[in-house]
Length: 207
Image (cartoon, rainbow, N blue to C red):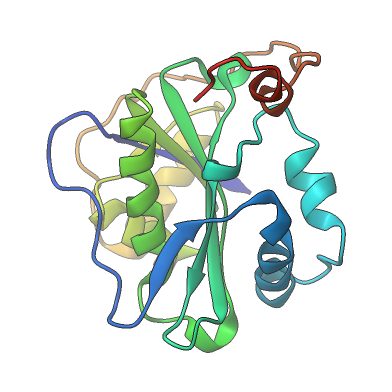
């Protein structure tokens, strides 16, 4: 079961967490999609050649500057995270962080949280107010890291309040005060083409 977390990115506080020495994190061009595929396959499995075009590019929300890859000191891709946007589902003011993954040999260094906080700043620069992400409710280390990084629970279903009570009991940590009202995503249809990448190709300004 996934739970949703949110962070206000307009409070003027320092958000981005410095990456460990030797690591760099940048957006990738469409023709670099093979780097994303390599990381996703190593982190999660079953991401083969062509997955980037199918999963990312052929999607309303895709823009190259939204997809980021983490590189180690040798220039080898070792992590990824994407600053998505789904206005028809979450509204214009909320960005959504997806596909956060680190390959096994680089885990345990806080890289996932560092990438997420870097993308919080990306979302803020887009003029959005909130960064959202989903995390498996059984992934307690990740949830604790996100809570420590300023994320709070976002209740999107009636059973999540109880689930969060169980989570904080296991973690022995209480999140900062948060909105306990139910705020599910909007049930709006996916926008038709032209997608954002198409609009940009036609000369429109899109962020």
